[in-house]
Amino acid sequence: MNFPSDHTPGSSDVWFLPLGGTGEIGMNMNLYGHKGQWLMVDCGVMFDKNRLQPDGSNSVVSADPHFIALRRQRLVGLVITHAHEDHIGAVPYLWKELKCPVYTTPFTAEILRRKLSNLGLLDSVPIIEVDTGEVQQIGHFGIEWLAITHSLPEPHALLLCVGNIRIFHTADWKMDPDPVLGEAFNAKPFKHMASKNITAMVCDSTNAIVPGHSVSEGQCFDGLLSLIGQAKGRVIVACFGSNVARLITLSRIANFTNRYMALYGRSLRNMVSAARRTDHWPDDARVADGRHLGYLPRHEVLGVATGSQGEPKAALKRMAMGNFRDLELDPGDTVIFSSKVIPGNEEAVAVLITQLRQRDVIVIEAADSELPIHASGHPCQDELRQLYRWVQPKVAIPVHGTLEHINANASIAREVGIPTQLRGENGDLYRLAPVVGIQRKAIKTGRLYHDLR
Ligand SMILES: [Zn+2]
Ligand SMILES: [Zn+2]
Image 1 (cartoon, rainbow, N blue to C red):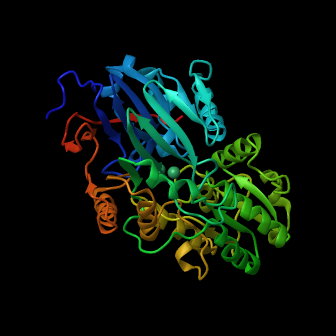
Image 2 (cartoon, helix red, strand yellow):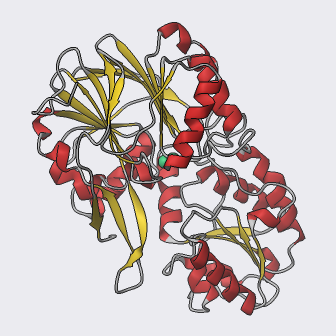
């Protein structure tokens, strides 16, 4: 059966239609369709290193929402699972095409408000804040917000009740027994899921090619403490701005090693201020003013800097080039990458490291450290296996990955006995009811470029 010509789901249809993030990593945009209505889950961007702006900064790219913009009177809401750029970043740019209520939890809402206010949109976007565990009805879509662990505050998975079909949308997740910030991974709701008769599990594939179990965020403490404890001069740690747990770990290490921690880079300061506002930042995690650290003895300085991917305007790049006003690096200072290189950024990072070494700065990458100093926020193969075994969906739908990741995720699902795996990409229509199947290239998808503001 083909897609109806008006592209409207009927009362017995339950559809999943990814516009972005399936067949690629980044810029997630998913649609669920039922009974004449659509619900969007996540609306993200990725950086486009091939389109540098005249000032050297990157543009961002999102999925083209054309399909849903054309029928936006049928779009009942946008649900945001968590505050990573690849899930939230496009909302300010695409808002005028969507104009629907946005549902998310307090920390993600706080990040979104800051983005909207930068573009003067704060008062025009209706944001409905929800709490973990809450169940809501948005049009014909019932949504339960399930706490999960990932690599920033308040990550959520969703249990969708659509007609008599239940869909488990994992969003980004891992099983972390010690996430440092927030509750440890709680298996209970997921162990109960099989009894709920789940039709489809739409699942993160980012690390589906990685064997074993992800490193816990809590494990990074020992590795970072040992490196920072041994360092003689200043220490600068580069990490992802959104990883608030890592920043809390570093503030504790600053205490242990009698250093003062400061944050270099606007996105880091913004994240910590949002975390403070939403009660995710502990009172004892002290942050010094970065402008003052330059006056301290070198062994008392612990800077945390943006720019782990070699971004041209970020604090670390400017330090490497010797034109960062607040802090200068001297020979014998140490830069630690508590991060991984995102594919595509290898060259920019290599250039950055060369520049740092030319200043006789000691550079330590995550792979150089004996103990872990970075933890991915995504599930490895053992975690995927375990979750499939608990949830036992009839259909596995791997998303959030390239075709290679999607195939690896589907193989794991098959191996643990999930009867059907639907492997597809953006623009494919996944039918979950009345009959399960996939229609390739049901709609045209595309990309939109936005100037980063
Ligand atoms: Zn994420
Ligand atoms: Zn993601």
